[in-house]
Amino acid sequence: MIPDKSYNILVIDDEEPIRRLLQNELSNSRRNVHIAKSGEEGIQIVRDYWFDVVLLDLRLPDVKNLELLIKIRESVPDCEVIMITGHGDIDSAVAAMKLGAYDFIRKPFNLDRLDIIVEKAHQKVLLARENAMLRHTADSSKNSLKFIGNAEIIKDIHFLVQKVAPARIPVLITGESGVGKDVIAHLIHQNSGCAAKPMIAKNCASLQQELARSELYGHVKGSFTGATESREGLLAFANESTLFLDEIGELPLEVQASLLRVLETQTYRRIGEKEERKANVRLLFATNRKLVDEVEAGRFNEALYHRINAFTIEIPPLRQRKEDLPLLVDYFLTNLGQESENYQVVERAMAAILAYDWPGNVRELRNVIERSIILSENGLITERCLPRELVEGPQAHKSPLALNVVERNHILKMLDFYDGNKQKAAETLGISRKTLYRKLAAYAS
Image (cartoon, rainbow, N blue to C red):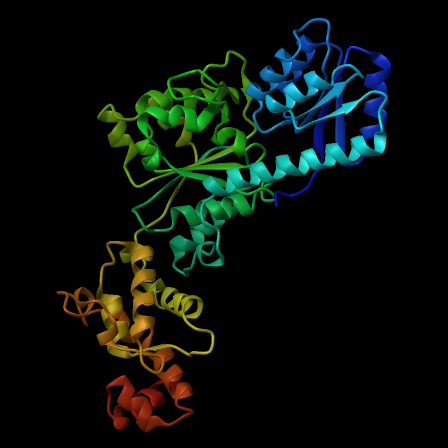
């Protein structure tokens, strides 16, 4: 569930004793109770602040019977409204529930029952928001939240993440597809003040151009053809949290200017809505394109580019940090394989892995290791377990890292696998026993 922190309640009633009674009785360490004395004041407060539950008097002198309920439901679709009714208003209360009210309570109040209704309404709000978040939240499994590597450039990236995470400035993460831009976004979120809430993620390439603005900002009922009900957008789902827009270069050009305004003013409007809303959101961006080239080609808003390019983290392709390949291989073997199996990559297979350029980067490596685990026998991953392009490629078995970086660790792991039996270890490694003894002597010197 979404963390059950304090939440906001609004009481709209023209009778001051009722307002004060409900404010005093409902307020506690988890509830912040606000009051409004008229329908006009109530709708303005709803538009300015984030409310979870509204208690609404069914009869207010400045609005028609159910008009305010409809306005509140349009402005905040995931807010639950509880109607306050008099003895003769039961039919109107039932009509209100048909229009989306959560429940109704009659005057004079049974405060214990009211407390229960308010709490249930809040739990319904939490569940609805959680479901909405889950539809937009990127996979945050343990395998996707670690950025593995000992190369100096990777250490620099971890340093940048730690420094920028507590700040509220936008961050642009660049790099080829598959390098782990989403992992860096998660790490920034996890080390920020928003970590208690889920990060909301959206790949802009999956947005339908005509609906991109609606999905980002939300819309009100009837604002365009097909808008049969009011909906919140990604900015609302990410309230007080992080919104990660992956492949920002794919965002339609006409939406980019409005996103720049969000960054500069911290406000936005839903489609069809005149009132502005506060955007209390940390924004992260990622792209596999060179946005400066996109700007020159007229496909990306220049002002937006300069705004999001203030702090950039560039992730290198895997071919530029091959010294991290053994670490990544071991990591995927541990996390993708069966816990009862001790997987080993034989020397020739590791040489092929090190020689390959990995155009699909870490994502491709993960897929290859997952495939190799399935094809392995007795936990041994040989060349036969690897895709043909790795074994038969033009650079196969030519990497100098094969011996210099991983040979010692793999020989020692193989010896451990065979409980010190050098003959079996040598056979598996594809070397003679004499060569194995020579290498072990070299390691000991």
